[in-house]
Length: 98
Image 1: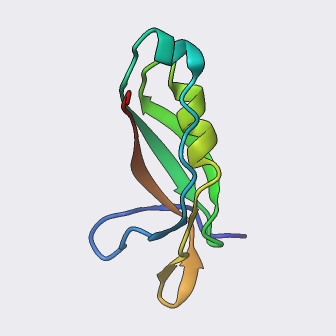
Image 2: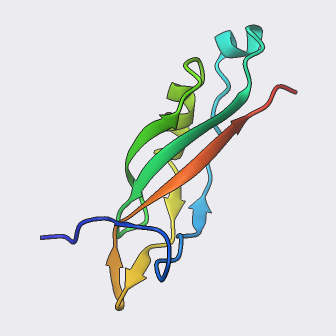
Image 3: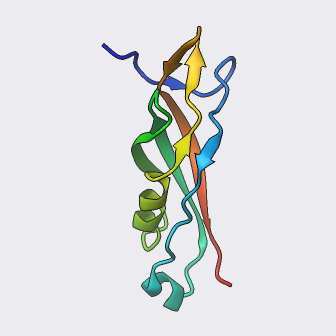
């Protein structure tokens, strides 16, 4: 069975993002002038792809757009003792009106 995900910290270095997908700013949030930071806990698999993501700090109008973007991100695989392991880390998605 695959190893359980480990938390980033200590000897576990956070993976490096290799593919960044910017969130699509929802039109309703733009017209309501909503901006801020959505904090997401993401589980990154041994292959570097986001397997699971959940919102820790919510801005209701922006949560879905943040989750959609994070689920498309790709990271370098994190290794432990030379083996790729899934990791859990916190990521932030910033929404600012231009």
